[in-house]
Length: 281
Length: 356
Image (cartoon, rainbow over all chains, first blue to last red; front, side, top):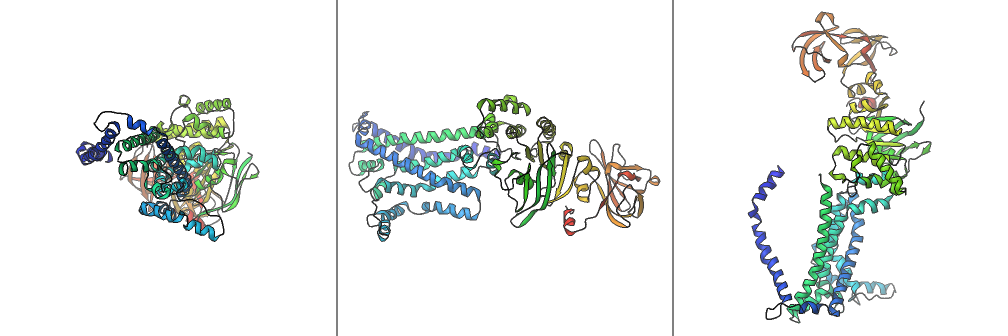
């Protein structure tokens, strides 16, 4: 029945036409424009000049900082989400659903709004420092630091880690864990040798979904980093809106794309490995 | 007398307020093939999980080799389990699956290699060392699960309906092989199943369970030929179970007739359940039998014919090698030695037990 349905849909491939049109106009074409702008000079001649400008130390520093902060946020999201998903796996019931919804809550609110809220929380006379001084503790300098940006990223992107991770972890059957215990694995060994490898597809796909927006964000870094911490996203924005150097902005985007493609390849690789193993349903 | 290895003592267990096991006592001996047999939901899997350490009893104790292991974690028990759903590690190949327990115990590489070879030979999968487990058939996966468990040299192997997902032919093959493996290893097997044929063909001891109560413990011949109550008689094999009254020793009143039998010690004029196996009833001419009736239905089953006969107001199930004509008037003859007399359930609890 199912096979027949999917077979019929496959033969009606014209149904995919609207999306194909959309993709060609708004995904492939703009991509081509970016490549074109980044690789030509004003007269339309091919040049690597803009790409070599990216290799200047200030741009490399911004790239490095972006990658570091994105990686750090991804890691923190993973550490926060993994135990949660383990707990949710064990109790697939209403109370579990409530916790799950709480973790997804940031998705429902405008991210600009929540990031501005974090600004208020972390600024010099913000909520954190008010509390600290009320307790007669030394104030902390958070706003306009990389730490503030990481906090903002984790808050905004955590749901993207929780979702794929939960799907992957909840699919692991209880009897697999019991088998590991039965064969002599304690809780930690079960986690390391069975749960982690079996949830690897979820870890990779969650990490990709956090890493990519974290790498390219400019709203979070603009609001929480002031102009003191410059990430790639902010530089690209400036090149396009303030400096009007579209060529350099495009070249920077291309370099970012390389990171993103690498990340997606990694995900595709883990996924196909998993599929090969599944074989039988 | 065989040495006791495992003892469950006054075990109570309930889930969500529903009592699964009540004051259960069970002793399992060294090198014994014990089968826990009962309908689904009777508590047999719970008993297995208690022994494996995956469940804690609400009260009661579990003794293993003279030691109290009631609160011991599963990884610390000298017991391994073969799960119903195979539960192999899909991110590892066959050899890695089998080596899992041995690596955790820090065994040397050469020891592990030898063990993998030995175990794969034992389960007849020698060429599959580096196969991916999810590309194997159900029967092969279950063999790997057995190999993975036995390399750890457990004193008891627990098997939770391991063959229920396999088709009939494969299941019978696996049953024969399992008995061979058991003889080779010389350890205790505790096997859970709802399939009475499986239980009878493999076990040294069958424990018949219903609704958390042990109905009978005995050898396969014992529980088949001398069931202690109507539940056991009905659950194992086909049976005609009829209300009767024990008139005196060796005479039972059955469907308005006094029939000689070979049971004694029930007292006089005591209500009993009378069980007669369908293969023990002889069909003869109407005037020669103890009961006379008419054939309602004849079903060919391959080795035997299932014949339904209405006689003395009861629908008898009779099995014969030769066929009979539907609608024919026939007589039924009962041999005294083949009439099994069982006490009626006394308490309400026991009554509930025999309802299913």
